[in-house]
Picture 1 (cartoon, rainbow, N blue to C red):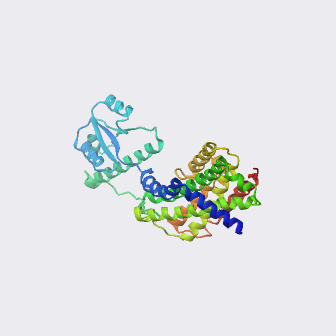
Picture 2: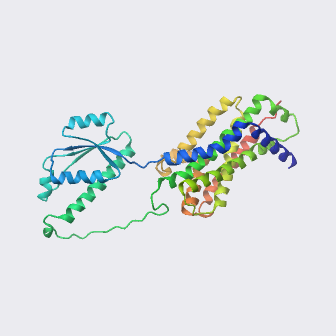
Picture 3: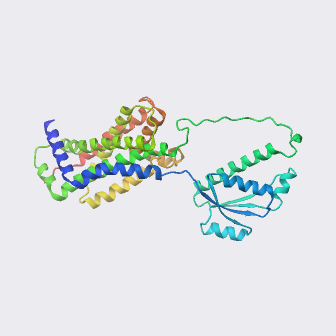
Length: 372
């Protein structure tokens, strides 16, 4: 035990001797949280809309007024030419074309179904679907207004209908920052643990100090544990700092247990540090390590479900995520922070993380060679 403590002390001295790393450890979470949380969002606002109003009636102007009053749409162009509107869409000057044909107002007055045409830039399928949904919402409101005003309302026979009252649980205000912040925290601790721990070990190889340890009676598991502990503590401190920034800057709710969240993060960091040290055992230079580590991080983060629902991925991707520690911690953070989940609710994720942590750490110890 004393051997491990001496080695941990040596690691801390070595880490904080590098002034750049010691500053980066505390600057990265502040910058990352303040930039990424508000910037990464799938909310769509300011959809640029081009209008082709060939009707020019009170009814068509009423619909356009509805769109102007929406927070989602900006009416940037108005034209009578379909060709010109298509050209605007082609040059990315607008995202959506709404064509109101002549006879639109007359059909409404006569009680006939009125038709309009919406042409949407669908290069980004998600944006296109949301734009269509927002447009449907505005048109639905317009239809309700017509019924309320109406126009021969006495002739309308009330039809039986289902009234729906909906409620959004766990994020009632649909604040996207609440959804993203737990994921950004995972990226933060991943970057600290995965990059710094591996680079630290490879740098020792490059400058030759690791050979001085290799000729001592220090056991392989002593060495690996001593390499993991400092970055484990630094990662947890960064997580605490990120949570504090999230509370102060974004008023993020926290419904569950902080201790439970830190327990999940501790197991996660052991897994990530084990993988980082395993990769560093066969990396000869910092460039080699950075290349492999960057590739692994990108794959783990993009497939973790931070941006897209995990359940929507193909089966092979869901199978891959069984060994992806980032997936589990993102799920744990969201469940604990937003739902207030207990240890029983996230026991599957904790057990899975523990298995991955043991596996990666064992690989790092087994692969490390004490050769001078």
